[in-house]
Image (tube, helix red, strand yellow):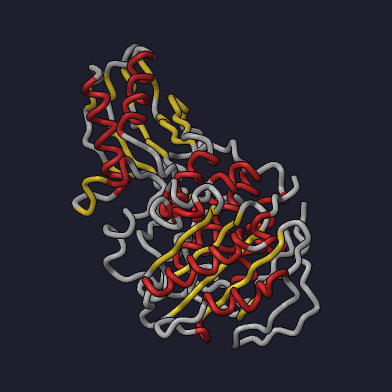
Length: 405
């Protein structure tokens, strides 16, 4: 179902807190007051609240101002992935062979080819090794090669600080096992190849050659494969805990949907294409990475609320998308926030040195987004303003309503 964001015919200034809109208890005025803080710039604040059933704008302030989203960037990425790939989608890691089998010997190389599974573990690799041994192979007269060719070889993204790789996220690659434990001594695909070789040896399979790198040629024989958990499960963990690595891997994987090598830029183009198809306003939106770590990212409160409503309106992804949001006072990055609204508010947080954000749903009936930028941003006062904003929404007649299915 395509989203049609119905805007109220009310003139709203682009750079100042909006005038009161027609709402019970003068809601717009109360919401305006919640955002005021001597430590947070209203000029760099983008905020909006929308009735999800009617699309009526209950409050708006700089709602079309492009600002740095921090981890709210993960919302359009996860929504686009669920929309394009489906909640049941699984990443596949393949073990392929070149050469011939002679009795119990594989005379040639084995290639471990990744597709960007962010959850690939040593246990998964051991299961692949067990499959090889179960097939009767007891010797590999060649090498084990890690194949990361589905993605480009960039370990980070434009606009990141140099220390982000290895601190804010493991290095990016189409083939990463256990979040690249052992990097930077070895590249992620080489670490994966070493892991597979060790797992084969543990199971009684002799491997003649040393681990290495390489791209499996066309026509290589599929010997075994591993499948990740469902995308719905992956997105749930990603959004609730704000996992940067998973978001980046997901974005690059989206860049492969046209059959080309996955890059962050190609993945971002897929996300923007989905936003356009859903008629979500994208003026000023710039997606550079998947996590929101890049200083080059820009998004608007209007676009974020459009994503949230689009996720609600699509029955195919609704449960997976809404279920991925943290629950106030209960789970994820909101487990210690808004305890008085426990179970009432679902949302996605975001904090960097330059941005602080919160967007989500109040009682399933109001979609909201508050994004605050600064150089740097005073994130504690920003969070306090966000919490006041959400609390005022929850206490309103709109927030107490229950959204219709």
